[in-house]
Length: 408
Image 1 (cartoon, rainbow, N blue to C red):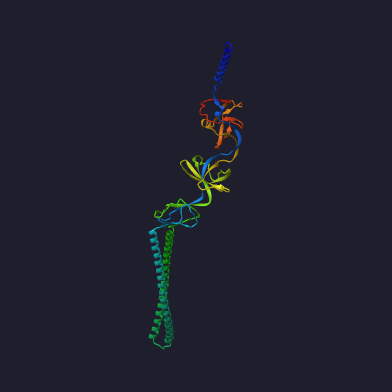
Image 2: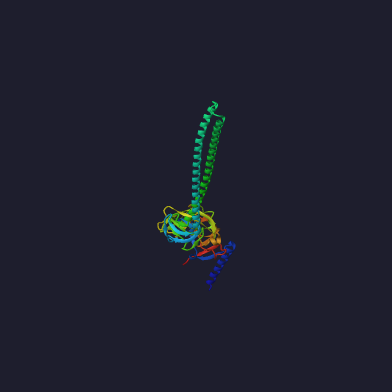
């Protein structure tokens, strides 16, 4: 008993010293078991800011088939999923009103052309008659001129009477006036006929253009493949009525593929055309490049289309999901800190740094920069080789120091 008392007294003294120490330092400690925390070593290496996104493999181009004219589905030439060639008929629609209108337009054009030909024939016949009259008048004028000139000479020689001379003069002047009138009439008829025919030709041309458009509309009732590819999402069954503009299906161009990804709107200002990403299939890495950014945000996400850089995987398939690492920066050398649950409690402003003997961890201030799904970039407070506690601090409260207990 006498031997125990000094030992108890010594422990009490040590306790008082420790209590005095903690009261002066103000540090609160917490014992933690080593196997229940995560200790990571700070390192230096290549850092690249990237985000993981899920990409869906899609055809390089999709052509949508819309009904250019409404009508009833009469015939389906190919099945959904079939491989089709350019200009191959796919669906036939019928539209009685459109077909009747086309027939009326064709009849109208035929009647106009017939009327124009009839007018041309009448004008030609009238011109021939007028030219025949002109020939007769020319002949009569020549004879009247001959008689007048003869009588004029005889009248001067006092061989014929004044009456005969005046009669031949009047007949000559009369035929001159007739010829002038016929020439004016012939010229005026020519101008009128030319104007009338020009107007008729313009009317026929306009009607023929309208007929051409009507025939195009009628031909649109047969929906054809605008490009070669695979017919998908066909939305037509025999007997259905389809209005103009309704989607009938789509054709996927099979000459290549692209990858479409949904990205959180938080990154919309940092994603632009030309950014690269990569994914791994069968232990081989392939590169992608952002080709198009869709600025519309839906449910907090926006979409991008990415194209393959180089040869894509030979076994890739439409609809396949790819895990893509989309790079937001170039690779640089940086001090790296592994990601962990500590960030939720500290916001990246401080961390528990393990001492050199590995028995204690102290709270130190840090500054973090960029991040990716694996690492934080350390700007201040840590250096390569430092060890820190990166697991959750949820149960640590306001502790300033951790005492690490090793398993025996």
